[in-house]
Length: 205
Image (cartoon, rainbow, N blue to C red; front, side, top):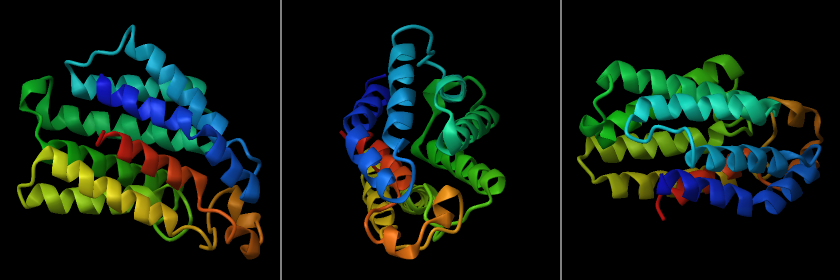
């Protein structure tokens, strides 16, 4: 519960910055979109989320996001959490006590794969995948090396931030930003990717 609330707080705190970046290349509502989702998830943490069942929790988060976020980011995050929840349930059923870092990483991988499949984007196209995929690759490498959950998250957070920051100046090839002039892209990183980076960083706090 504390981890989920930490992510929500980080996204609420980043609202102004995310909207500033989005205003440079889009319609400026990215911060509001993520803040709206974060507020709803934080509220649900106090009521109906089942923290003892991780797979169910991921699906509940997906339901919350689907009901309030909207925009492309909301759709992609709904897909991500729903797919990750289904993958975790397939691996473990309802046995929350058995969840390992490797289980979380593989559920994360399924979520990322579904986002790529349904969204049609790939890393290098200036989307949230420029943070998600590096985070996944770093987390998987650490999990396979037998690292602790803390180290898995630390490495994933660093990779997510590096990937997100690299979107500044990157030509957009997906979504509304693909219609923006390349010169505009040099003014700001992709706000969706930065939101993902902030969220993963919050998991390390």
